[in-house]
Amino acid sequence: MKNFAYVRATSTEDAVRRSRTLPNCQFIAGGTNLVDRLKVFLDQPDGLIDISRLDLKQIASTREGGIRIGALATNTAVADHPQIRREYPLLSRAILSGASQQIRNRATVGGNLLQRTRCPYYYDTAFACNKRQPGSGCPAIQGINRMHAILGASEHCVAVHPSDMSVALAALDAIVEVESTHGKRQIPLRDFHRLPGNTPAQDTNLAARELITAVILPPMPFAKTGVYLKLRDRASYSFALLSVAAAMDLNGDRIQDIRLALGGVAHKPWRSLDAEAFLQGKSGTPKIFQQAAEIALQGAKPLTHNGFKVNMGKRAIQRALMISAKGGGVV
Ligand code: SF4
Image (spheres, rainbow, N blue to C red):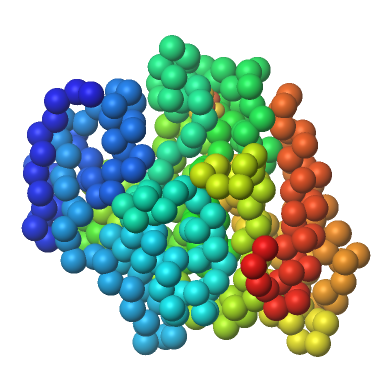
């Protein structure tokens, strides 16, 4: 680990102001991914601005009927929050499906959004990696790519985004609130993370020195039917091979509204807008769910070792939609 300057911010304004004066610096809160990267020289900042004691931990109802989650709320606090468990259960289940209890106690919502891919070539500096060093190459394309992307990848990077929470937030139309010395702005979660294109080093559309301050969930009554289905190699402490977040508003058997997002398939949480459009107004039958799953995966381009994800994805989508149509529940 390289030496770095350390400062503790006293307020959000202080944090963003210091980020302008401290060259090559990063914010640190829970540090559950950043510290790992520091240890192996993936990140080499000259300064860290500790934001962990800022007043950004509250989880509160909004006037519109949604919830505002402070960026420093821990994953545990969000997953256990009574209103989130009641009104947005798929978010609670997504968080509880990730990491360990100890990590969830430490990790924050803002940091969860910013965690970087777990592509093994990215973490092993003996290999080239376009995300780590642009232009050096992507050994995963011809290498061991079982965990990698089947949708939205590029010739420069086939990594997947690792966060379960972000997939749930994509399905819930969440909004990310950010602040810098230029003021505040809001970014829809759907537009927060990026596909790799020819700039795989950039994971998000967050500008330099912008600080995440909150995540806002708009009211979504049918989110109570939400499902988070995660498929992985072992039952706990494992990243998703593939995951599905779904919530459905049914009137009789007619689908009035639907949200469908996939994890473990792309460089960002993958919202299946074409499948949602297909399902809108249709009857919630197994046949329709099967067709929606085909649509959701129709652009898939599997690599040498991850072709299984295409069929796995179709079946997982059908299962998640079936469970959501029955009112949701534990998967
Ligand atoms: Fe690097 Fe992306 Fe290739 Fe992995 S998939 S080696 S992160 S460029």
